[in-house]
Length: 261
Image (cartoon, rainbow, N blue to C red; front, side):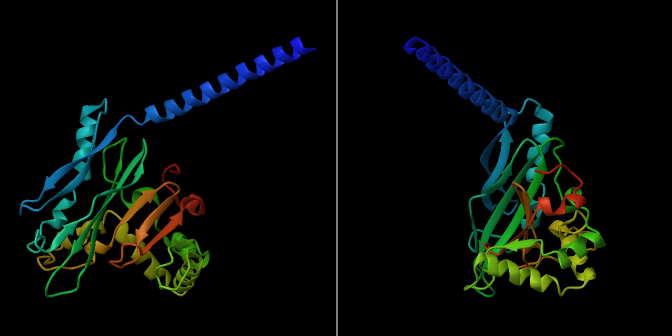
């Protein structure tokens, strides 16, 4: 009886080792599928302002890697302004919000410290498709139409942190946010979310229409979105970095143009 018991213990032990080994191999396979690494390098604007920027390295496809790195820096031109100088701009370390085989989503944040106007945070967020090397916009991911606007208005799909009011919890802030959006017109909701599309984000409409952006206009620098696992996050129109809204992609499956991330 003891011999039989010992044999079963041995068999169970071997099976356990095999299961653990297979799990480790599967995990290693998932990690190895991410065939790139991220690194920081200094990016210098034409006016001499320098800050840490995210780049990728280690990809087998060198042309794709070059395209991705160019895309990651392709909208820094909006920082090329007379007032964007070391004496009044402090840079924060870049934040990697999403790093997968499909998307790389980065946030850059700067603290604006002028003497003659309002202080605040400036943002630029860039999301790149790691398979094509192209910058991703909201309308590459989500269908922004009247049905989507109605969903936002009627189904309370928005979330936010508890900083909308200092004494709000996350749940209270989310309820306040959805109650507020339920009162918006469909046209307003459409206009709001179209700010994150390729026609408007990074001030594209203004550049193409010769709008004078030599002076500081915070709209460009407080309009941004980025991806996190299972959700899309977007600015709430404030320079407060903690005032961020998001939508869980499970709630908008019918409007996704791409596989869930």
